[in-house]
Structure formats: C-alpha cells, structure tokens
Image 1 (tube, rainbow, N blue to C red):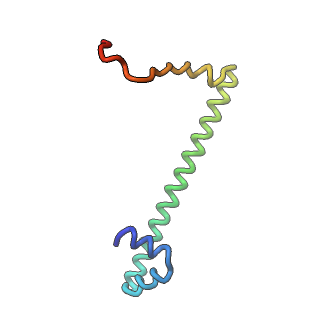
Image 2 (spheres, helix red, strand yellow):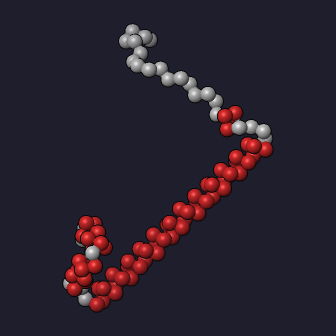
Image 3 (cartoon, helix red, strand yellow):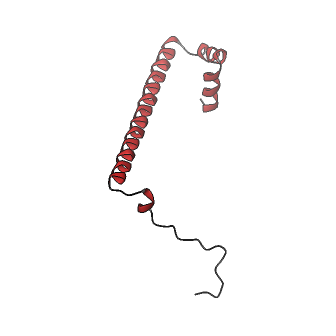
Length: 94
C-alpha cells in the first residue's frame, strides 16, 4: 500500500470504509493495534523533542545569565566577522 493510498484513507472516511470492507475482522483488529503502536511512538518522539527543546532553552537562559553576571555582552564574545571579498581573484594572483 503506497503512502498516497494511506493519505487518501486518512483524509476520507468513506475511502477508509471501502478499504476496510476488503479486510477480515482479525485483520482490522491487527491494523488497529499497529496504528495504535505507531501513534504511541509518534507521541513519545514528540514528547522527547519538546523535552530537548525545553532543556536547550534552559541552558541558553543559564548561559545568558552567566554572561550578564560576568558583566559581558554577547558582542564581547563574538569577534568581528572578517569582511568578505567580492568577485573572483585575479587569474595571475598566486
């Protein structure tokens, strides 16, 4: 079954019913079980991603606070970026 077919089934209840008519009750229960596991896995991945994002924000806040406590600014930490040369270098430059 292609991803397009699964998308059609997920978007339209009548298409899902038509697809379900081709399956036995045992197959439908197995499908429901598998889909439930996939949903749980996706939810867990989303929780993990959100937790990582919260930890990142917390670390960032701690770093900002430490910078402020030291009497520094972010500009003090980042050296001036070198200016880029535009255009091609001359052909005879070595």
